[in-house]
Image 1 (cartoon, chains in turn blue, green):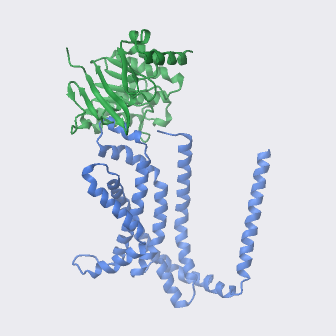
Image 2 (spheres, one colour):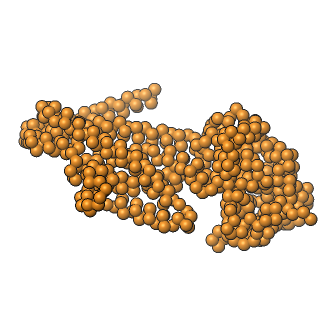
Image 3 (cartoon, helix red, strand yellow):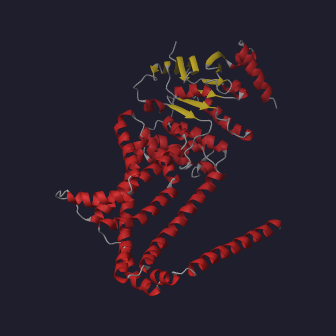
Amino acid sequence: MAERAQRRRSALIAGASTVVVFGVVIVLIVSAPGWDKVQQAFFSPQDFRASFPDIARKFKLNVRMFLIAEVFILVFALLLALAKSSRSALLFPLRITATVYIDVFRGIPAILVIFILGFGMPGLQIDGLPIDPVFWGIVALVLSYSAYVAEVFRSGIDSVHESQRSAARSLGLTSAQTMRHVLLPQGVRRVIPPLLNDFIALQKETALVSVIGPIEAARQAGIYTARSFNYTSYLAAAAIFVAITIPQTRLADWLIARQRRRTGTRGNA
Amino acid sequence: MTTPKLAVEHVWKSFGDRDVLCDISLQVANHDVVCLIGSSGSGKSTLLRAINLLEPIDDGAIRLDGTNISEYGLDENQIRRRIGMVFQAFNLFPHLSVRKNVTLGPRRALGQSASEATARADDLLGRFGLTSHRDAFPDQLSGGQQQRVAIVRALAMDPELILLDEVTSALDPELVGEVLAVIRELKSSGMTMILATHEMGFAREIADKVCFLDGGRILEEGPPAQLFDQPQNERTQAFLGHVIEAQRP
C-alpha cells in the first residue's frame, strides 16, 4: 500500500514539474520581443506544407545513401576488426595497417573526408573512376564510419571470455575457426545496440554529402529558404530525420535493456 | 616396458618470476586414471592446460604415445584433437544448442559431415541421459547437466585421453553425483583420464594413481590406498588432514 502511494506521489510530482518547466520555457519564448518574427520565419504552417513534398522526395537520396553505406560499413568494419584482433605474427602488417587506419579515420571529421574525396577523386581525371559526387559521398561515409564500427565490433569480440577460446582450441579448432564459430557470433550479438546507435548517427550525417553537390533533404530545405526567405523548411527536414531516427533509438534502448536483463539474470561464463 | 600413453618429463613453467610447474614428471598408462590433488594454486590446472598445449611450457617434454608434442612448430590443433578437455566452469558455447555444442568440434576440426556428427552426438547424448535437452541452450540447463554436456562434447572427438579440470568444483553439492557417475562410466569403458580434483573420496575410488602437488611440484605419488592411508610426505599428511576434516559430514 505504501509503495503504491509512493508511486502515485512520484507520478504527481513528475507531472507537475514537467508542466511548470515547459510552461515557463514556452512563456519565456513567446513573450520574447522578437517572437512574432521568429514564429513567422520558423513556424509557418503554409511554408511547412509548401516545402515538405520536395524535401520528402529528396530524402529518398539520404535513404539510398545510408542504406548502401551501412552494408559496406558492416563488411569493411568487420574486416578491420578482424585484422586488428588477429594474433598471429604473420599478420602483423595487417594488424598495424588496421590500427593506423582506425586511428586516422576516427580523428578526421567526416565532412573533411567528404570534401577530399568528393573534389579530389574526380579531379584526378582517371578513366573509369566515377565522378558522381553521390558515389564519393557514400565512399567517404563508409571510410569514416567503418573506423568507428570496427572498434565496436572489436570491443564485442574482446568481451567474449577467454575461457571460450580455450574451450574451442581444446577441441582442435584453428584460431580462424574459433573466431568464426565461437567468438564472432557471441561478440557481434553483444554489440548490436551500439551498432544501431552508430547507424543512427550515420543517417543524419548523410546530410553532409550535400557540401559536394548532391541535393538531399537538408540541402533542399536550404533551397526553399533561399527562395522564400522562410526557415520553416528546415523544420520540415528535421521532422523527417527525427521520424526515422526516433523509432530506431527506441529499438536500440529496448535491445540494451533486454541485454542487461539477460546478462543480469542468467550470467554465462 | 610399453610406452606410456602420456609422459610428462621434467616440465617447467613460470608466470613472470613465479614458478608454477617445477620439474614435473608423470607417466600415465593406457586406460589408467590419474588424479591430481593439492590445494588451489598448486599447479594442477596449469599442468592440465600444458598437456593440452593451451599453456606453453618453458622446459621439459610432454610425450603422447612417445612423440614429443610440446616441441615448437608442431600442429597443435592436430594434437588437441586427440586430447579432450573438460573445464571447471563448463565453458559451453552459450550461443549454440546442446547438440551444436557437441557437433562443432567433430564437424570443424575433424571434418565430419553434419549428419555423421549429429548421429554421433545424439548417440552420446542418449548414453548420458541428455536426449531431452539436445535442443536446449546451455543457460537453460542445471550445472550438472551443463558439465555432462561438456564431457559429451569432449567425447565426441573420440579422444585418446581426457583431461578433467576440477569438473565438480563449480557445482552445487547435490549435482556433483551425476557428473561423477559419468566419469565412472568413462573409467569402466577404458578411457584414459587425468583428473584434477578436490573430491578425495572419489579420487580414492576411481584412481589408479594419485599425485599430490604442492607449489608446482609432485611431492608424492602412488596408488590411492597407499597415498591416502600411509602418506609419507609431511605436507601430504597435513593437506589430507585438512581436507578430510573439511569434508567430514
